[in-house]
Image 1 (cartoon, helix red, strand yellow):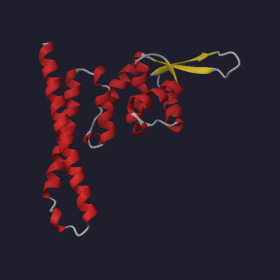
Image 2: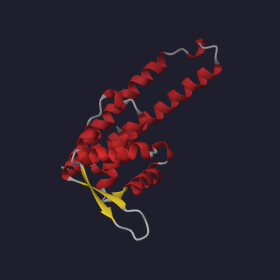
Image 3: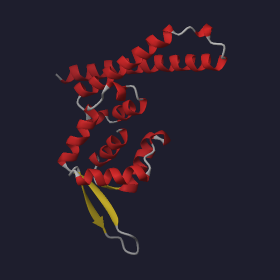
Image 4: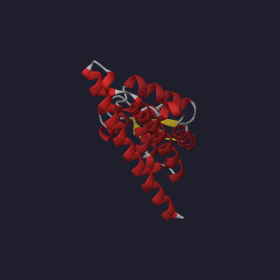
Length: 176
């Protein structure tokens, strides 16, 4: 689902052709968020069929025509609905979470807080689970190292999410 959010998020910034959408996502978020053509173009076609975007053909001398995609009002609504749709399973997926955070500048503080609190809940559950695991019981040193690493990583993310919550709450109360 995060791929759909990234694609629509790119079109919120203005009309773009497919390659430009793909390139911008890659440049902004890195290789971890790669959108390949087998994902991009079917998604663009699907969004066009549902009225979330339109496609214009741009004629270029001596080159194949380029298709430029423009987001519609329906597309903006679909974008917000996709971001709002953040069940626990999605909140447990780091990519789903990070994509939403990357687009916080497009969201109301209330929705930002909801996303952050859902992720925080998942992290707290992971930390609770990792604290119950007895690192001394494993005979495999590498399993122990992986568990230690994951616990440390989760603790750092938990602190970061808490910081973001504080910042969003501070910004939201300053707006009132």
